[in-house]
Amino acid sequence: MSVTIRANVPIPLTNQAVETKFISFSGFSDNKEHIAVLFGQPTEQDAPLVRIHSECLTGDVFGSQRCDCGEQLEEAQRLMSVEGGILLYLRQEGRGIGLYNKLDAYALQDKGIDTYKANEMLGFGHDLRDFGPAIEMLASLNVKRVRLLSNNPHKADELEQAGIEVTERVDTGVYVNKYNAGYLKAKVEQQEHRINLEDNDS
Ligand SMILES: Nc1nc2c(ncn2[C@@H]2O[C@H](COP(=O)(O)OP(=O)(O)OP(=O)(O)O)[C@@H](O)[C@H]2O)c(=O)[nH]1
Ligand SMILES: [Zn+2]
Image (cartoon, rainbow, N blue to C red; front, side):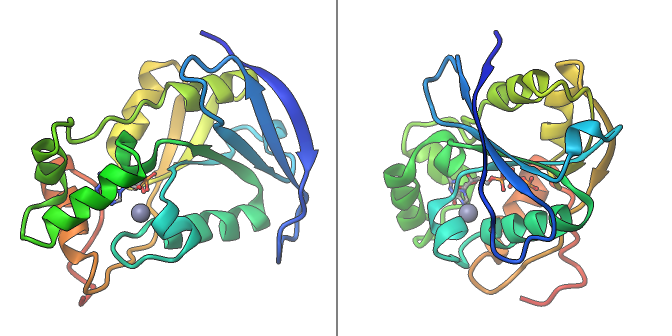
């Protein structure tokens, strides 16, 4: 399994202090358009800040409050615009079930089903994500050590198992509100996400 860089193009972003480059790849086995965004010259750092972010159209683009994805994406860009870093944006919407199915899962959640059970009721696993493409992108960028911006210990495990050293797991902020409180609570209770919901009133 290996991917190669297809294009490496500067794309200036609003309010970025450092240069940003979008890198596309050839050779993903799932044929999806995963992308790496480089802030500054992170590949020259010993262990750059890395965020592996799974696509969430509702949160990332429209600022949905049903999850914390939009805020986490914004935070990653804010931090990386100062210290540099690599944002790996994986096209696996809805933890891999796709947008339409995610909306079906939301409809079930509105009837009181939790986020993981809703996936299962629709006939999916609770999390269908594959972090292989992120590992392949890091390998092709020659990045062997990272500081991982995530509350999800499973992402760190996947990298370590693939031989990429996680020198530090950096917690993201806690973005709880009345619409996403149940979703975040399920992540903490069922998937050991490190999110301190205690100090935050929803
Ligand atoms: N199936 C399903 N997917 C959801 C739901 N809410 C958010 N998502 C998806 O969950 C994924 C969240 O991805 P990330 O933010 O990268 O990962 P994470 O596992 O929450 O871990 P962090 O790195 O701490 O953010 C995205 O693909 C969202 O589209 C939901 O209720 N149901
Ligand atoms: Zn989301």
